[in-house]
Image (cartoon, rainbow, N blue to C red; front, side, top):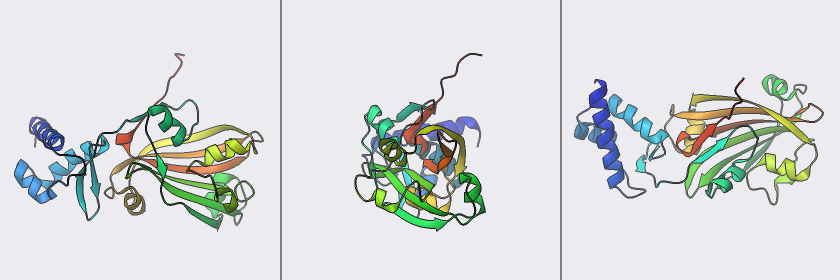
Length: 237
C-alpha cells in the first residue's frame, strides 16, 4: 500500500475513533481490516501510531479501546523530578498501583550498575503509575538495603523513590545519569501496562548518585509515549 492510501486509512481511523465515546471497544482487527479494505499488517501499523498518541489502548487478548483525552506530561529533562511532581505541574492526577517490594542479592549486572560486590543485599521496588484507571508508566528501582529498607515504604509512599530520598535528606543526592531509548514492550511490561507485546515504549535507565559519588539507586522506567513528551533545552555552543 502506498503512502496516500495509508494516509487515507489514518484519516478514516481518526474519524472513527473521534466518533466513539471513551472506553468504547473497537471491532476486532480482522473485521476492522475488512471494513477499511486493508491488510491486518497495514491496519496494525496505523493502530500503533494512534496508540502512541494515547488515543486508543490495546489490551492483549481483550481488545482495543478508545481512550479519553488527558493532558500530556510535557517536561524538560534538565532537572531530575518525579512523575508525581511533573504531573502535578501539568494538571494531571496520577496514582500508584500495586506496590511490589522484594529483597534480592545482586547478580553481576546489578552489582556493576550499583558499584557493589555481587551478592550484596538489594531492595527492588516496582509499581505501576495510573491516571484514572489507565496505566501510563511502570517503574522499577533497585537500591542497596542500607539506603532503602522495606519499612521505609510502609506509610506515606506514593510512588516516587526519588521524592522519598529527597524528603529524608540522607544521603544527599547530587546528579543522575540517564540513558534514554525507545524499546519494544516485553511480555511482562506489556501485561502491566495493558498494551500489546512489542509495542514501542520510552525506556529510561538511570543511576542516581550521592555527593560521595556513590550510586544509591538504579532505576528503570517505561513510559507510554502518548502520555509523555520529553524535551531538552540546550545552550548554543
